[in-house]
Amino acid sequence: MARISFVEKDKAPPEVKAIYEQLEQRYGTVPNLVKGLANSLSLFQTLMPFLRSVLGPSSIDQQIKELAILTTTKLNQCSYCTSQHTAMGQKVGLSIKKIAQLPEESDIFDEREKAVIRFVREVTENVSASEESINALRKYFCINSVACIVGIVVCCIDANVKNCCA
Image (cartoon, rainbow, N blue to C red; front, side, top):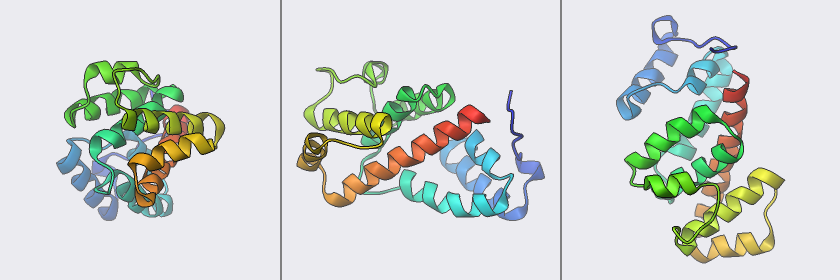
């Protein structure tokens, strides 16, 4: 049961309702995080462009995004986000074996994926990443993509806190 009420579509102001409809078209649902943010129109209007930028099309493919998201949500033990992104990860082609293995690195992952998992783990657990971890990430991703991965982790940590408090 939610401790912070959600703004449902039928009670949402027109500008929020329009975003809900876009999310329903794209994902088939409106995430609870978004419904909670809608309690503060100014917060909602500020954060939605950031969420779209982080989770929308970018230089990072959707499998890598979901790998980073699932690593973060599992480390933070956010069952809601983990459940939602397990389904999304499978939808974009992540195997259930890989999803189950996270947040641990193993031979099931290629070196590129391991670099993402290692970097995300360090940032999530330490609010920092080692030079070794950053250099490993840079072997596979340009600086724009590294910045996108950082944005994904920041967004996930924020969502995990909001979902665990709501």
